[in-house]
Length: 156
Image (cartoon, rainbow, N blue to C red; front, side, top):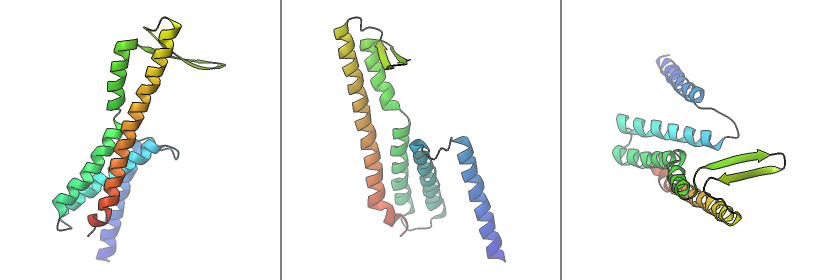
């Protein structure tokens, strides 16, 4: 009976923690950002539990490994790279305006006044997003390679 009560208490505690997390974060079944936030939430809980309860011999090392993955996911989610790249872009081309029309979508650049400048600004804009995408892909690659490398050791 005592074991069943402890199990119920643990389940309720977990359910409340995850319910609060879901409540605070928009959960859409198609949303990859929520998936990454949920993974980070789980990793943070794992690292804390492993470190605080010393449930494995290498608890400090394992907690650091898990926290590193959480850090990489946080870096991916924080948009810092995009903000830095966009600040450089705006120094050169000014603010961008995004215009949606019946026949499509266009982007305006404050300092691009000629057709040639608009073409250059558009290419710089595309290149900026490609650089940011490459950095973000690299962060996720590092995170999931780290998981693949250490996951089985996190339990032993």
